[in-house]
Image (tube, rainbow, N blue to C red; front, side):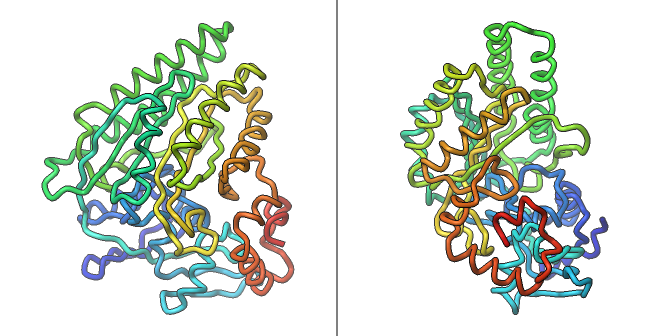
Length: 381
């Protein structure tokens, strides 16, 4: 869990795999550097962020996936032998990115970084129809998009980021408050309300009102400029008891206007049919086209990642089964570590030849299947 060396001249950082992403971001900021992309869940380790899809509202195609920043890694193979891979072995490196630990255990990585670059951030509250009318235009635009969707209130809180030559002063405090409100305050409050307010109609009305108020406060006029270093300055998710449940699927950005309307209907119809609904806003990001990893979810085109979240455990398992069926019907691409109730048949259909290529390499480096558990075996054996 040690940052080994920050190279200000060549714009690289060498770090051990146990360092938290948030800690790495703060150390780089002290050197005037940042990661090219912006990544949520800063409580993940660097090794975890390399091994599985890690993304956020990156602008354009800048570092869409955390793993794309990797230019060299050191790991231990399943047989205990050490292995080093660098940029001269780019095809092999692309296989080890997002490999979910099934090719070896990463213990050190070298990442490309850059001088801190500032952006402007504009915030809007719009209806789902208005959001759908404009979202396709962002598919190939040089912008970063993050949004919070409240399907039961017909609201979308939109955060659009653009590079600007002179965006003004950038302060980390507003971004810390924003992260604290969205990732810490809401889950705690909603868990408490689910325990103490038995009437669903009253509880959900309170929950939605608090969500709207929080979004209006944290996306205030003070959060109008930033950088990747500033926007990831919060503590991230702390280790400990699970605060919420989530499932994430990626959809083609060029068709997301249709998907978002269908998802709105899905949420309302599921509530009417089963009585279950999520209590946290769904979060979404534009993920740029990124072919740096064989198992990249945005290998062929820009995608929109939709993360559905809730603190309510009762009914969640049935809900995510229905959500997975919805995602399959609308061309969703699953992620092995973040998409719940995914089917092996659908995974094989979506990833196609890339999955078969990955399987062939995996069999060569781990012929005994030592690094496979039963869950991963259904996809990679």
